[in-house]
Image (cartoon, helix red, strand yellow):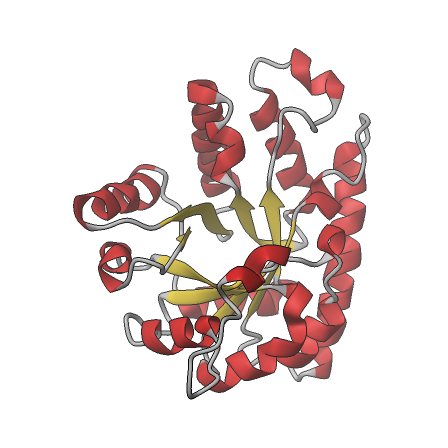
Length: 276
């Protein structure tokens, strides 16, 4: 998906909602365990219920890998279902890969050629050559971890450079932004640290930000919109547990739809306020 196509979807739906498909066999409704492919059955219902409100889906590969070969196949089926039924969706593999040489080539091929994902999350820790193979695919995106929403992000990401006081996540963004462009790179910036988005916008005013941390993690969507929007909107805000586990009963899809619509309405209001 191109930058223009992504922006058009956001404008058309008045939404920048990314639904995180963190589909855990231990948490999906009990009645789905009678299905031959419970994770796919769960995902399919969630996708159908939220597709009108979302512009992106982000399956976290860990939950599928944990289920072995069957889980991996259900991840592939989920991607194929979205591609077939909702071809304009932006599809992110939340895989958090980051390795060198042929290993990165293999990961890029797996997610972009085999699974036809639009984007993949990567760790920048090992440097440019871990990211470059992913940037060689036209129409595909890299999503680099910068300022994450977890509590222990402070262990490294907030460390300050001697002399300048520049934080490590700022150094990561400043260095890596030259590897690609706003048309094929975006950055993870957590909603639980929304006040720092203004500083990030000074470094990368035109890039998209993938923002986790609203809902179950306590981040404020209002704060994210206030500090993080740019001329194109510039945000994909992810909600996972708050949507997909809104109910543990047979009404789980309807509950997910209700929660997604609630978030979308707030996004629509924010886009209007910012002239989008």
